Image 1: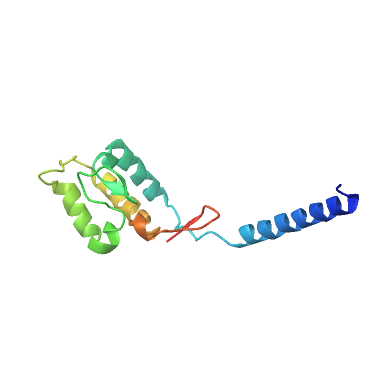
Image 2 (image 1 turned 90 degrees about the vertical axis):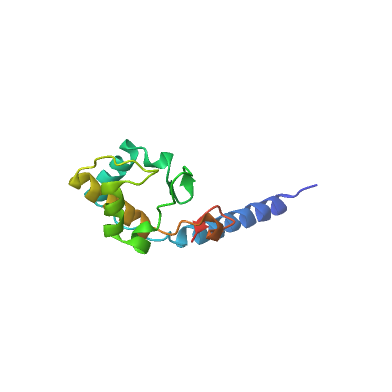
Length: 133
């Protein structure tokens, strides 16, 4: 038979375990995210308006016709991106973007680049469900 004392001990141990787990979980801060500017937010809308995800990937998610653009800003630079946007290629049409739309899209790609890397195989998945790069 279970005594009142063993019930109380079980309750105390569960409460201590819950508190320790909560303290551990909430004391580890998530990585700092880069600041999202108004221009970057507008760039995201341009990205969505022209359905760039239909062909390109960000963080390995999206279409497969074009390359993953997550870290293009740091690898190629803004001039390279603007040249592709202005002229298009054989597979990517020239969308006739305005200078403002082009700047916004470059700011969006810069913000994405600052937030991490594109290869999901390099991500570390923790037991509590969080992901670290």
